[in-house]
Image 1 (cartoon, rainbow, N blue to C red):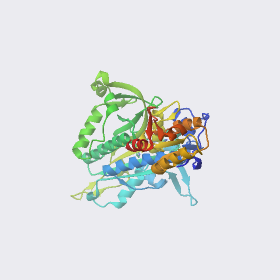
Image 2 (tube, helix red, strand yellow):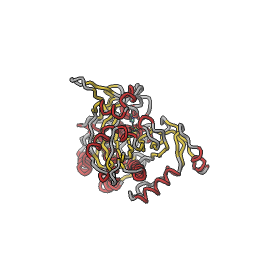
Image 3 (spheres, protein in one colour):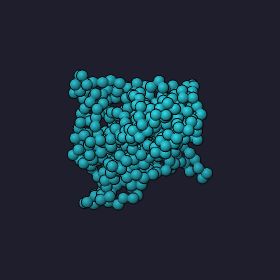
Image 4 (cartoon, rainbow, N blue to C red):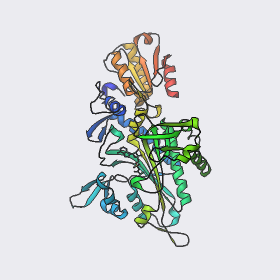
Length: 435
Ligand code: P5A
């Protein structure tokens, strides 16, 4: 993409309304603009990050056996009356009335809707187990939306729902999702730690939150240092490996400070104990038959008796992740994106726009890298281009100046380490491709 023809409205000044780094950097790097309190427009570069995160989430959900679908954002109030949550949800629910005075709402989550769909679409115990998910916008009228996309009112969530015939099978679904989450976060390039959690609004008796460590995180967390080097990608989805993985990841203990399990904490060796702050980027719940019973969803079992499906729900804050990753990965100069989800894999900086030699080299590189390369082809000073590339946070910068160009070389800079390499165009392209 050519920067001269792109809408990436970077800001030099620090926006006054932003209190934390990720919010400031998202505005300064031209990723988002606030449209109303807690409601954001995703500009082209921001949307590229959101889409890349969503795609990794999607691939790992699919790999775990979950099926993608899409439920609407607008739901009927009657659906929520069936579970009893319509009144219980309170002011966080955005309630809407249509022209016929029918009561609707903008969905804050989808347990009721998916239960109604399965109640309607399944006939017997043979139709289970099922895990379904969608990636859809939610609305929660938070009292105090803040920190940009970290606590928005409108936000993008991946939410999955599992339906099983008994506890054993439901617990397997729960552990499968936990593994899918660990693999997802590892592929994104961040460390997220699973912690025992309270179940809050969703209900139930087993829940884990996933926290990204960052000094500005809202929750105080205690965890085992072993998590910092976890490797979920080598674990398959077979029942035995899921079981071994879950054992390892829940007995290597971690907890939030509200629900600090002293007995489990005592098992963590002294030298591996860590205390820090975390941002919750996901939460999973097992809540048994809470919704299936309340909403009259039962299936005939093998002997004809009624079976109320055992359920769980599993959320990832896709839009929150964008802010959380920046919170964990930035410096004074700007964002330091992990390779897998950067808006552009490389920034291409032409230090003398209009020079026949630098222009030709840049065109060649841009042609090879295509849309995942942001070509700074503006008539701007080198200093401006350097600062913006650091701010937007491309994992690689390919710097093409007249001196190197004359001898057939370009400079390659790695954003995360500051390393610089003087390379031929071919070698620079190869190094970017192999990362
Ligand atoms: C699980 C999926 C649920 O809603 N129902 C369906 C369950 N869980 S949750 O923990 O309440 O939300 C899941 C994740 O969504 C993100 N999130 C938010 N992101 C931005 N702004 C918000 N206001 C917001 N509220 C929740 C979090 O990442 C959370 O873990």
